Image 1: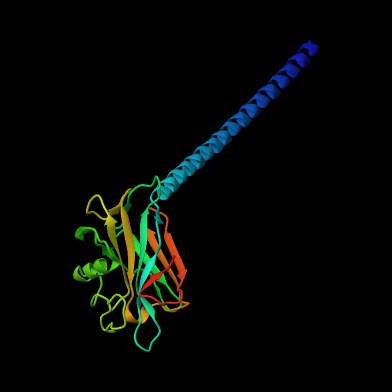
Image 2: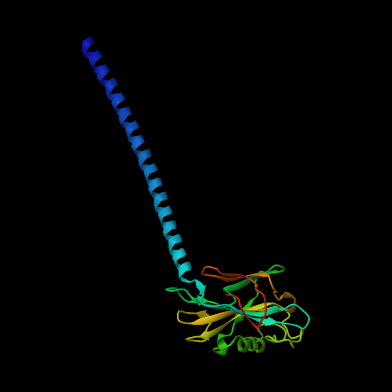
Length: 239
C-alpha cells in the first residue's frame, strides 16, 4: 500500500513538473513570436521608407536642369574706370529624360554670391508670357517694360552708359528662346536662359568669383560658378 501511494505521489509530481515546463515553453514561444513580429514589422517599415526615399530621389533627379551651352555676359566699360559686367545669361534646359520644371517664383529661387555680396533670392519671374527672344538685349528691355526689376533698363555695352541707367536691385529672370506654350514650366524640347541683371554697386569685375544657384522646389539645384576673366570686349564669354 505504501509503495502504491509513493508511486502515485511521484507520478503526480512529475506531471506537475511537465505541465510547468510546457507552460514555460509556451510562454517562450509566445514571446519569440511577438519579437519576431516586431522585427518583421520594423523591417517592412524600413523597406517602405527606403522605397519612398528612392522614388522621391528619382522624381527629384527627373526634374533637374542643366546648362546647355556657353554662358555670355555684357560688359560695362566706363571711361577711366575698370570694366565690369552688367548682365549675364545662362542657357538652361531639362536634362535628358527629365520631366518639366516649374519656374514660377513661388517654386523657384536664385541665390547669388560674389566676393563682396550674397543674396539669398534675386529671382523675379519669367518672360514666357511675352513670347520668344532672340537676344539678351531684347529680353532685358522687355523685363524692364514688364516690371521684372526696379529702375531703368541697363545699357548693354559701350562706353556711353549712364550710371543711372541701372536697376536699383540685382535681379534674375528667365526668358525662353524655344517654347511650346506660354506657361512657367520649362519642358523637354524647350530652351530658356537665366539672366542676371546687376545693380550699379554689384557689377562683378576682373577676378571676381561669382556663384549662381537656381534652386528648384522639386528638383536638384543647378549651380554655376565662374571667375570673371579679363574684360576686353562688350560681349564676354564665361565658358
